[in-house]
Image 1 (cartoon, rainbow, N blue to C red):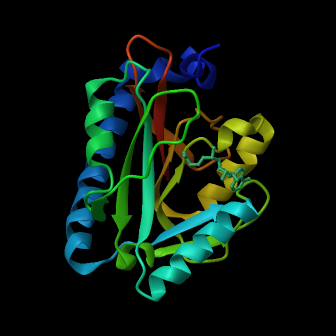
Image 2: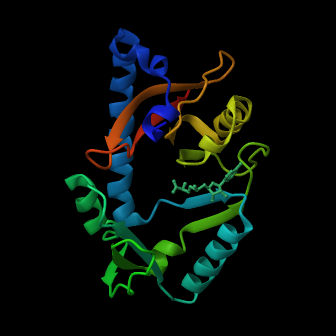
Length: 225
Ligand SMILES: C[S@@+](CC[C@H](N)C(=O)[O-])C[C@H]1O[C@@H](n2cnc3c(N)ncnc32)[C@H](O)[C@@H]1O
């Protein structure tokens, strides 16, 4: 089954034409305007701090290493491979060409690894002041309760897909407790909205990465009431 079809059941989006949904989209536009203002302000005042939550020791150790190096002034290199054998949409190619430009500078890309496919690789050297704003935390979003400051925005893409409905509902309850009131969750999984939950979906965006092809996502945004 394609990923696009697997992650969402059509009934999850049956409210698309209702007045309530339209009101919700209006609120989402206000949220978007607020986050755009924050991004513009951040460019000057460095307001945004990013906390990563992960259960993988390998991921957490890597993040601790790069943030530690950044504190001694070293940049961090990100590499973006692109499989040239797939019919990516022009938007994907455009994104691949500019991703990272706001937080670093394009660097000499390493030779693409020989993996039996034709790859193009872009490399971007991320500025240490940006890397230093990442705070890695060893945290299980399904089983643990967050006791730090509440978040404005939580992005959980390609994480909740590994869990069944019970675990996803536990994660959603934890995420609700981690967000400030009015805070936003972005996920590419449609989650069960239990009546007891204060999290409500406001809308979704369908993105195709290649045409033709089954590559794509439904990005759903939820808001803590
Ligand atoms: C496929 S990667 C997705 C990474 C990134 N979010 C993205 O969209 O590319 C899934 C990540 O989720 C982490 N993960 C899985 N279950 C988790 C949980 N219960 N709490 C926190 N992190 C979890 C994994 O260790 C892994 O690093």
